[in-house]
Amino acid sequence: MSGGTFKADLVACGEIAPDLVACLCHISGDLPNGHVDSMIVQTFKEVDGKTVEVHGYAEDAYAWDEALGPAVTLPSARQDPAAPVRA
Image (cartoon, rainbow, N blue to C red):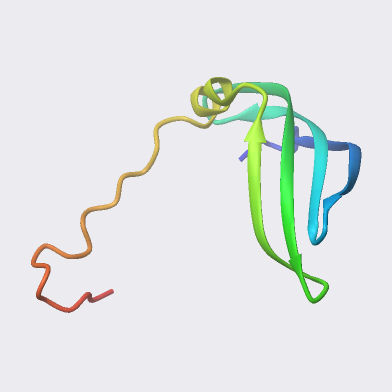
């Protein structure tokens, strides 16, 4: 996706609450529709030593959206709410 230009540098990381870790990263690289060079924060919820949930927060979410390009919109999996969902 980035042609080998994507780079993520860990700036700081630490436990901010019991079982909750936050990491600050500097991200840069070329993406399908542009270049990104910004900071992000990712939080990791840990249970029994395993990561069970991750959330990311971008310094400039609009720049990420523009660089990644249009989102893929999937059709409704359930046209008839009473019908079973089929893959």
